[in-house]
Image (cartoon, rainbow, N blue to C red):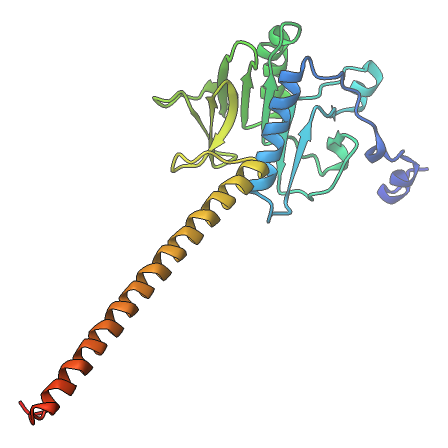
Length: 248
């Protein structure tokens, strides 16, 4: 007897609870770089609730993959137009078939060959991920690719070496040996700590400007009062001489 879609669904296991199966980051450099990418974008998009950022998280994309234990977890990936909530892993068939819009791999001696070749082909042919970048926190190698038809095409860098991401609406570029986000206007997207420090500096500048303005107003008031006092003394002298100070 054939089963309805609803009956079949009840018999299928809940794959949404699959756990990630990724190794630890290669080094503290890799960990700090990953943290930087996550926190800066989370801060910039803090008012949005329609995206998910995966950090060293497994992407499960087929049941055959589960059987083969052929796990593939990008160091950083972004999925747009989805619910912003915590997940143990990204299970494609439990997420309306959504694959990442953008992937960033952090190269290391043990992963660079796979990231430049096998993973690039996987993200291009199977995931159809629109943009793929890689960066080495050790050698600072930085490349970016955008899906054009069926193949990745290299994203041309600007004169600063930045590469534009259409998926982010931001530039990605290396500054002080770290991969950072930059706005279209060239402003660096800060970490929450950097944003707080900038706000404190701006607050101090504003306070200093207010104090300067207040001092100027006080000085102008004192000058005005002195002028009025001098005018009153002059008027009194004129009256003592029998002259009406109000007469033209």
